[in-house]
Length: 188
Image 1 (cartoon, rainbow, N blue to C red):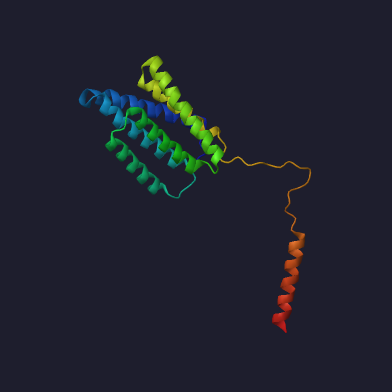
Image 2: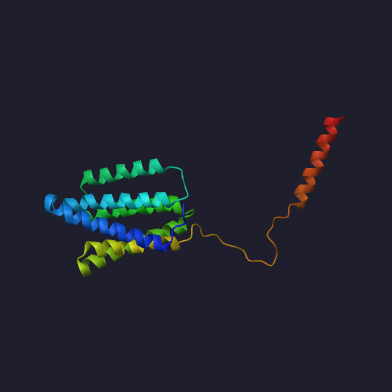
């Protein structure tokens, strides 16, 4: 797996935005805009989650993650949540997948949650200014692409003038003495 870059995110944003706008344009005359939006959101969310899983070095739990996401998508569709909550559930699922597969700490996951909130705000701003699904979705995923700038973990690094404490001389000496004592016991 290649390490994700912002450029990968830009390409994914363009592809996902085109797919979303094309699906809405094609399906709206047949089933109405409300139903199409409730189909497009989980479809694009699933595509983005698959993209994230394919890009992650973590191999454990992928089928479980997709199964739980599917159960969540079906449940939210069945419950008929209001559209803002419906969107937030899917954005939250994407955030959770990224937090589980790309971060090893709470603070990076919280930064990613903030990034998700900014991306939803950017989507709302773009759709209200332009009225274009493509530009709004592209703006959303462009902001989401910034997640590569969040470090996987944030650990304090002590900067001292001494080398790191890897000198195990007392331990090594005690181990050698123990090995010698065991050799004496078994050779007698």
